[in-house]
Image (cartoon, rainbow, N blue to C red; front, side, top):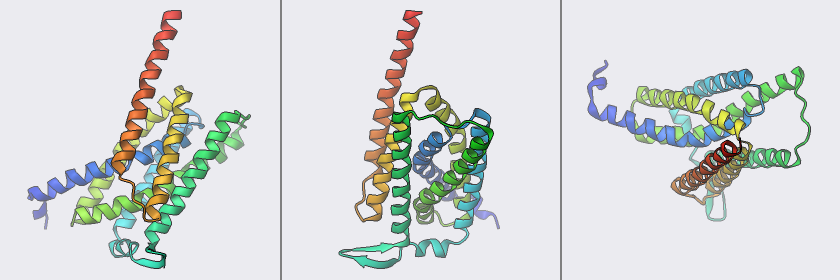
Length: 241
C-alpha cells in the first residue's frame, strides 16, 4: 500500500514540488505581511494563523477535486484570439483586487489619515484581514495547485508539498510583517510589489504571460536596495547618538 514511499522519484517530485510551491507563495507572503501590518501584534499573529489554516484547508479541498481543477483551464468563451477560462477569470479578478487594495493602502499611507484603533475597529479589521488572506490565497492557489497536478501523480505528495509550503509561509510571514511594521518605507515597497503582482495576474488572465523570474528578480533587487538603505539609516542613527 505504501510502496511509493520508497520510490526515489516520488521523493524527488516532493522536493521539487515543495520548492515550487514555496516560490509561488512569495506573492502570498508579501500580501499577508501588508494586510496584517495595521493590527496589534497578538491580533496579527492570530490573523496569520487562522487565515493560513483556513487557506490550507481550502487548498487540500481543491486537491481532492482534481477533475474540477483541470476543468478550470477549459475555454469558456473567446474574445478575439484569446479563449478565456475560469482560471483566467479568477486571475483577472484577483489581480484587480490586488491593484485596488494596494492603491487604497498607498493612498492611506500618503494621506496619513487618522484611523480608528478602538476595539470595534480592531475587531472589524481582524475579520477583514482573515477574509482577505483567504480570498487572495484562493487566487494564488489556482496556479500553484494546477502546477502540483502537473508535477506529481500522487495526491499524498501534493498534499505534503502544500502543507510544507504553507508552514514555510506561516514562519516567514511573521518576520516579514514585523520588519515592514518597524520600517514604514518598506511597506510602500511591499505595496509596490502588490501592484506589480496584480498587473502580472491581470496580464496572465488576458493571455499575456510575464515570466515570474523577471518579477521575482525585480522584487529581490528592490528588497536588497531597501535593506541596504535600512542598514545605512541604522548606522547614521547610531553615529548621532
